[in-house]
Image 1 (cartoon, rainbow, N blue to C red):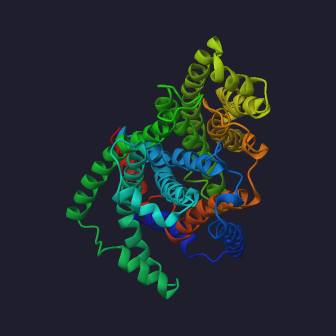
Image 2: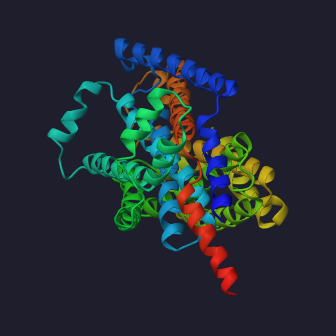
Length: 440
């Protein structure tokens, strides 16, 4: 048993200490994209928001679309690390750290993109200092900060035993890495008292993160629902946003599972069965989201009154019809039909399906934000043509790609610094399963 456990530990620690030229190229490529985004943001700071295509009508552009998208992605931490873990779904344990890393990276970039969206980022602290409890904006700021803290703790604390393993076993890595592991391990000795306190603390965090995760997306939906624009005046937006976020989170973890398994050769730990089970969860979440999609549009489509009617017409058959139906059919309905069959839940197949869901989810956030803003209830008279249409400028696209590169950079660095699979948890559950088999 001990020999087998040592082999498992060596296998899972190998990715941390291994030098990989392809990884360096990947990091350099991400840094180049981020550098271009930083230059675009420098231009935005120097010249003002006039370099973007945002005007009085479309005052929220793809920055807010990205914010809503990243907040949705971050909910994967509460889905896999908390809900499945608290339900004692044993097969999900190898996926917990991946989901926690994605959650932390996504919520960090969601917070950054809000700063980017501000014309005067130096005034950000005024939102906190002079925040008004009547405004959902201050609620959003507070809940994002809370969720970020809980997500970081939920990632870091259960990792302590594995960081201690890195400290004790990885003697060949660079000196700065050894010092990092020594500091972060917090003198962890794997004593029964430490394990007991860690278990209790982790359980508390797993319970805490669930209502905060629901709150973060519900409050984000209230930012829209409390703004008087067609398409947003709906009590359905809260559950609509939450269900869409869980669906998106499940799709993200499937794509991450595929590439991490392939890159780090983890076929023994992330198996085909994991893809099959995550595929079933994704089908269920997609069906729930499909219900809220129908519920969201059915009422306004029946009435077709005033500006609401114009908004629905533009989505169904107007300027945004192609994007709308691409989101609904290849981004939602077709994936559900394909994943119902076992063949559709094979690793490569479900990765491709999940990628289409991700693309559809991003464009869906674009459709939530942009068309509504272009149909105000009180239009401005004699406005310039640029007010009536919105096509993101190259600066907006550069910053958008940089934000995605930032998420991938954080994920890549954390995956390279720490074991991807929770080693101690994996060994504990393997030993427990073996003991139960021996008893039988």
